[in-house]
Image (tube, rainbow, N blue to C red; front, side, top):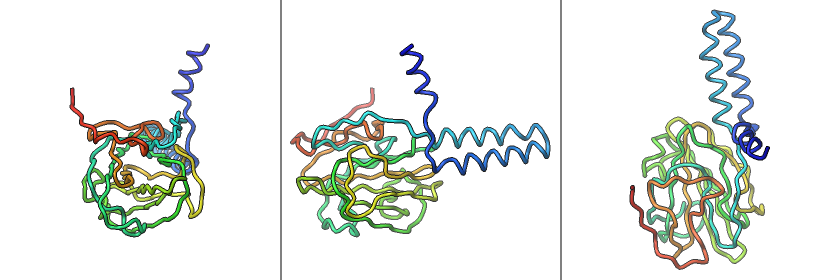
Length: 234
């Protein structure tokens, strides 16, 4: 019985409320196509099923040890570089470690808070919509940046970045809000990128090419002095 329950949990994944208008719209399109010519209902239903799949919102098991920073999104690590945090967040010009995660249209697009703390700054930047996998997307694309301060005074920045297809960033955070690691805070519709800027002196525990699971994959440890990790494709 337990195995059957696990299987159903993997199939019957909750849908984020932001997806229901898209699903309803796709079903209306399917109905109109069916009225025009019955075989045309197939692409309409495929569109509706894709919307159901895209807006899935599965639960995650979040590691909660103090100091751990978890991935804010599902996707592929495309870069671990040194870069200054977004200037609008007031974190200074000194470069820190930036981890960039690319979400394709098949990834779960629900975004999660990377660590526990208080939201101390928010900054929205209206930009372009180049391919989010490219490094310049961090500076050129439309984005929503967030500064989080942990209980011991360390600052982490995380940024939602719209991609080539994405045209809508949803962020439900506000200044002064207390948040927990792995807590859902928004989404980016239809392909995107998420950047995380770590405190000075903190190294990434992930490498480019690695897959990350939002809310579960540990991408850094604020209490560890571990050197940057290396990786190899095998």
